[in-house]
Length: 111
Image 1 (cartoon, rainbow, N blue to C red):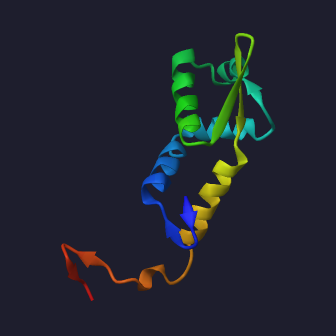
Image 2 (image 1 turned 90 degrees about the horizontal axis):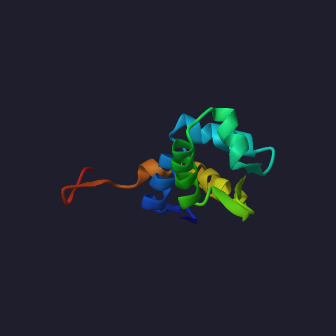
């Protein structure tokens, strides 16, 4: 979560970890057009159900995708607020002035 210009570093790291995998990025890319059944994702990736489930679990755990059950099928979609949060983190990181903060190393000021 981003508050003003302050980052929740642990939350930011979890989001970027979820985005650091090519398969998970490809899943998000596919979901840009709307909700998809897990069976469609499985076919598109020619992946084992367990492998795909793992990637979907990672994305869901950080709030980037949601799922819903319909009968025996799961449908996945992007949570826009999750991607907005990633955008906000990048915006804060790109803001000038952050490098002007004094760094502390082992309890001593560097400069």
